[in-house]
Image (tube, rainbow, N blue to C red; front, side, top):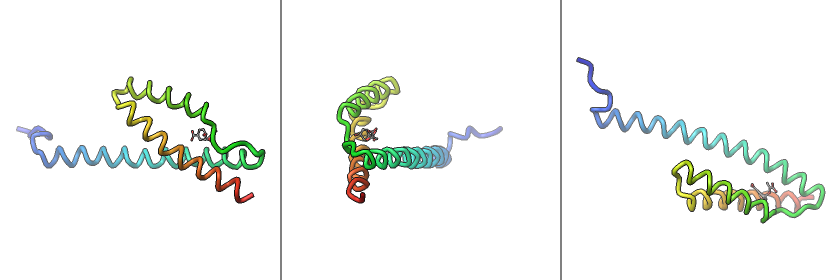
Length: 101
Ligand SMILES: C=C(O[C@@H]1C=C(C(=O)O)C=C[C@H]1O)C(=O)O
């Protein structure tokens, strides 16, 4: 009789880790794509003398992401922390783009 593939904890661990590795790869590609977009925003802002950060836009994004996180059963605080961390890096890039003009 065929064994249940999940009856062996080692195979279960390997199967789950394989999915985790795929998800991590997708996240890296998604982040790279996001930074490619924000880089273009940074160049546009530097060219036209627009401010690096837009707190009102960020506030709207935070509210939207918190609501999406709650729907997806993800901690909204965690979603906000992740967003704030990424945006801080984006703004740093925008400031560097403006300085190098
Ligand atoms: C990318 C922008 O610049 C900043 C970075 C943001 C982001 O990474 O989502 C949002 C607002 C701005 O503070 C933008 O203004 O759209």
